[in-house]
Image (cartoon, rainbow, N blue to C red; front, side, top):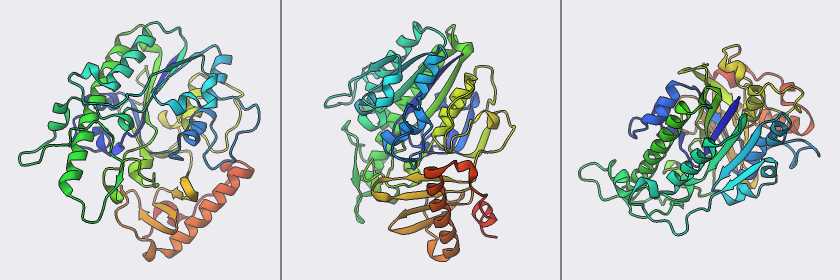
Length: 405
């Protein structure tokens, strides 16, 4: 049994066909979704890579105390003990230097592009070169294996050939920007909408490039000897704001949906859960628990909040939890329930879910009771993670789960 975890940084869930986008062509990822189990409400628990990967690799939520208990084994270490060969492939220097990365048997570190420029051919792009290295590794992989690919491509260089971004230009639109630099700015109230449109077109071109790369990987997996035994996970480390809430790019990493709501698809080799979807609330530590479940590892160390997604895929349960809590920089916090999303950075902002997908309409002034209940739930959650198990939390009230009548 093998697994490939493909984690794309700065991939906006709203720009994939499987998540409702009709503007950008993503045929390969749409095909993947038709063969995978798709989670509609996966959120990262932190936009900080160190905290995020503590969740992915140790099942340790971002709101837990800074470090897991001494001696707590990480995912790669647990798999090594079970005889699974592990490799980390990444172009993110900070992740390669993460102390948990040392547990992988092999590190394939790809240098990020220096002074990136738009490529003439797809093969010259940074993303394509990363996927080539992943496929090269798979060709000689010793089973069973875990290949974890964290690619920073969408946050590092927009070097797709110019025709990729021009494909999204309508008659009368100005030329999209020609730079391969990733934008990072806060829009002014009087910003030029054509400038933002050009950025969106450039991002769309990069997503199209990614889709072609994913298609090549899918084709390889489906044709290689290890394919019938390999789970493929497509996830994202963070989304990419494109003008929502006036932010473009990383900016201040404010905890809005365009940053924290990420795609998550699990393609099982036997077709389990193919083309099915779930509205369950999912956090990064769940992937840690799911991979251990995939390899049927017993006696794994408990995690404060993680739950395997396998029972959801098998339709044995509908979800693991009734809330998700997130930690941002400078004390920023957020909480998501089936009916609400509240962001707290100074004055709280409240948004009705799932209708207000990208947090357009702040209703905190009209739902003060909901705000106070969510404040209490968030505080209780954080205290519980510090002292016990999130599973010990009492269920949320109906108004927080089902919304106002």
